[in-house]
Structure formats: structure tokens, C-alpha cells
Image (cartoon, rainbow, N blue to C red):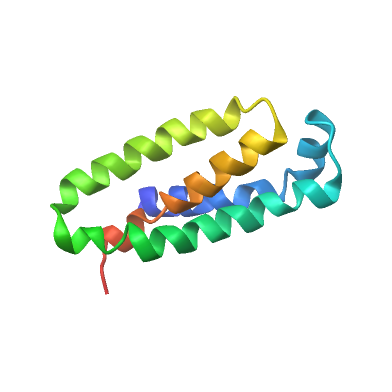
Length: 106
């Protein structure tokens, strides 16, 4: 359960840090405010395309892959040098944040 809350929280955590992101990456607030939106869009894509894979392949392998990608993408978000890279990585991080839905299918 902790893993599910942690992965879901990664998408929303950037809301608090938008002011810091605008200063660090030298960008406008309107540009930085699209980051949480892209993370939510990635989450929707993950729900549509990754979650159904839990019925087609073994869940254990899928969970390990999703958690590994999530870990790598979190490191990538931390080290992202530009706002464009940050946006792309946050979209992908949102897409692989569907671990709770894989663990507990409807």
C-alpha cells in the first residue's frame, strides 16, 4: 500500500514546487504550470495502456518493470537539465504510476 501512495504522490508533489522550478529552470510560471497537467495526462495514458497488461502478462513481472521504470524516471526528473526534459519525464512518470491499479484490479 505504501508503494501505491508513494507513486501516486509523485505526480502531485510538483504542485508545491512550481515556484522553485520556475526560478531554477529560468522559465515562466505558465510554462511550469503545465508539468502537473502532463503528469495527470500520463497517468491517464498509463491507465489505458499499462493497467490492462496485468490481465495479459504475469503481474509480478509487470510490477517489477513498472517500479524499475518509475525509479529510473524519478532519478531522471531529479537530474533534468531543462523544462522540456522535465515535462517529458513527468509525463512518462505519470504513465508508470499505475502500480496500485495493477496490484488491485477492479
